Image (tube, rainbow, N blue to C red; front, side):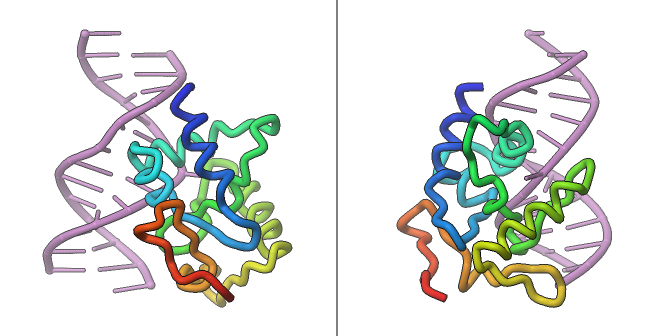
Length: 109
DNA sequence: CCTATGACTGGTC
DNA sequence: TGACCAGCCATAG
């Protein structure tokens, strides 16, 4: 459980209108990408984690069990100004954000 | 303690 | 881009 807090903390750093990937958070948190995904799946309302700003490396929303939160996630991102292309992907060169300064993608939209 | 599972990733074809 | 495969590590049972 404690490890999730570390992951959540990184996730909370993601600026509004930007997205990050499981891999980037994983690298910053010092754990595997799957654990980040697992942590996101375990997020509770009280955690105040912008889980919707976390997508996979394709800039696409990872399909999960219900598939319901998927549309909800997309809706929230679009509300923050994130744009999805025709394939339902986000342009990580424009909206991608890395918690690691070394990988910091050129921000700005 | 050990095995199964998973909102993943990176290399190769 | 997409499909396939192997590695990844915390949780659950």
